[in-house]
Length: 94
Image 1: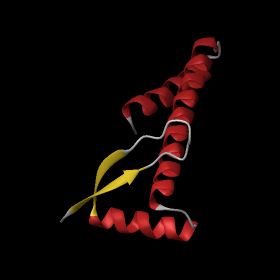
Image 2: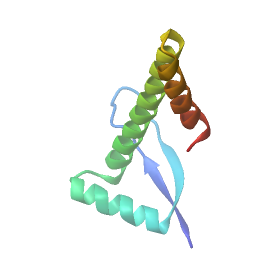
Image 3: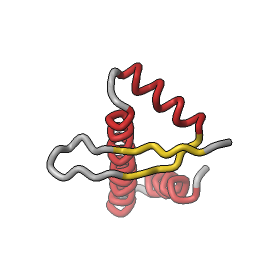
């Protein structure tokens, strides 16, 4: 399977950077098809996708921090156990 490079051009006009990311031919075809459906360039689509991924990662971190805070502040043994189990699953998987 050949590998292609998808070049990402950030949409921000203040300090554009260029990043080359190796992707499979299959992934490149999907990126191009989705960009076309969205009516944007491949680079704009990849920039948007990266932004969404970063936002999702931050939301995941915020959710984890919230659970830790609830765990530390809880005085209900049942809730402490439930939150401990949730946090354990977040750390170690299900």
